[in-house]
Image (cartoon, rainbow, N blue to C red):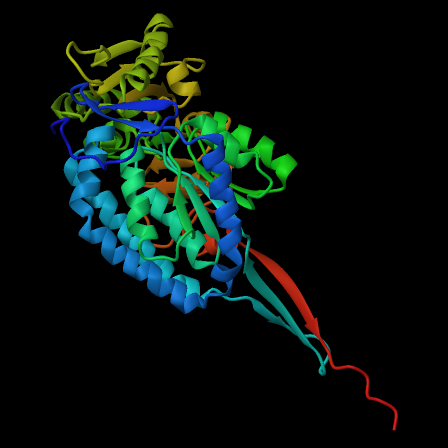
Length: 465
């Protein structure tokens, strides 16, 4: 789309500035001011000031406001999708889907929030014993650029409906999308309940190091997640972290190689490989390796991908490819930076990859399909289980015994059998290893954003007569 997309006015201040360039053509979309230290402090003061009244608001009333925000979000779907496309290169139709998914998530928490409940305990007959969930207080939501509306709506919606106030810092790569999202949701809530701050890591650091913050929810890189966790040790804040992943795909000998290649292409190349649970490494059984590779190459060459989010990220992706080539891998298709403006990169298939190459050991987060041929299912499963991440994993197999082994042995928060994407609504997983901690979705997110108080009530002793 044109870089002349309409962006909200009044975003510039006398602060450090961030330039946003359209990754499709390199043209300037706009400039955004980084929130100052004083603005961060003011936001924290305001969040703490209004939180007690918001916590006393009836859960049903909070749910109605969230439902109204979902309706308003649908009314702004075209504007939000256009900003998302201009800032990150996400195809317009997929950006629309993200906004609609976000609206659906707000409605989900509008329903779940009022019925979120504690427990009654069985104590003495004359006493009442309860476990009551209460809001944690001030929540900070640090959200990513690759699905800026849907992910943000989950964290913001769950935090608001449980009585927390929220300060949202969207990614500096999608600040206009985040700002409009914030205005739309905040417009249906009391002043100060939801605030949005622009900025880069410096703003995130100010927020996460402040002891007035009670819970931090972060979706982003592992390095940032570790810094947040370290800061929370000193402030006492609860952390919810969904961080990097290096998700494996294991292809067994008894599946159709053409179908398996379709699944691999979808997992590796959807959204140009910029999905939290993208397939990052492939282990294919030697018995079907050649037809699988032939089909995967064909699928890669048939795909016309949207650009990566910016040239800096494109360079990081290409570094992984170069490292693999230098260590002996073969580029079967793609693998080179195209001429011209923007941050484009082709769907790339690598064969002959070996342990130790960065495309296997690290998260690439781009349209790269590194294929490692293994001698049997045991080897594929064992190598897929290696590494420091544990976000998700997929196994394609016709064997029930292998499927059962896979979901039990793979150290990942989500294991999918015979589908790289999919799952029932409301599912929530806890990332393993360096991929993070805590539930980030579903009803369980309401538990994460509240803390439980045990209450014991018994009558006073009778007065003597």
